[in-house]
Image (cartoon, rainbow, N blue to C red; front, side, top):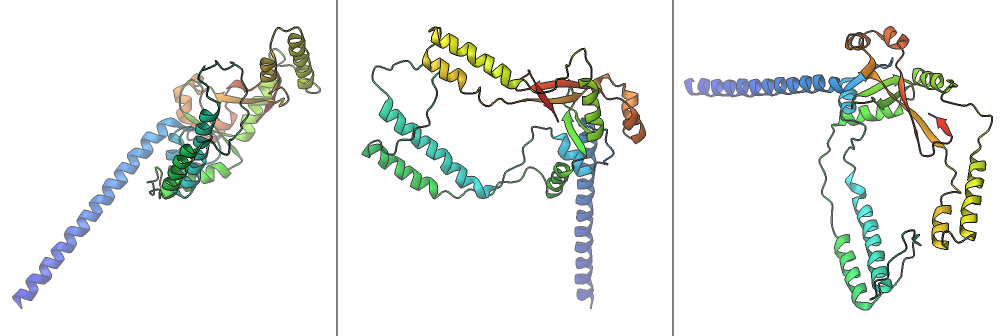
Length: 288
């Protein structure tokens, strides 16, 4: 009877020890998570009506250039695509490299020609290498974000009522209501001192004028045919510029920033100016 009681006591003590270890590990995890969230809030400013969850704050604090670990199922496809480009370079090097090493034109346009065959020795090497690469099985990579953070990222991408931008002059991530963001953009565009309203886009007129200047230079032999083709290859695209803004939160006093974190009415009524940036062609642009 005493022996049986001793066994039960040992089991009870072992159970209590495991339970205390589990509780201690949970407490450590919760402490680390709380510190992680506290550190993440230093790099995220929410000026929108959308309340951010802890996972959304953590994923936003990683920055706009953060890339989650991609799925490993498509690694082989990308690997074989890269090897196909390697095969093309090897065949072109064998077929078109000459002993005199003639200098290439600085504005040479790549044709994208892909030779089907070079020589027997090189083709045997490429075939054997492709066969060995095709047998590679990619290892499953450890994801750099948790499942809840990936769901938070998916929710942020699907939310069309907010705009996420990096702040001007620092790396803080700002979340703004799209309505307020667009209103600030229209306020700046309506300023006649810096912007001019036009009835129609005159991109075609600028393009035609540029084409005339380039053709006259080519006819007068100021540029050769290779340079002429290089300059004219992008004129047909006629892409419009891309207008966006970076919030200038460094001009907002710190005490007001702290009040805006808890008071939505203050966030809604306070004017957050933006630094206007136009990418691509600065001649004309669209708003986003």
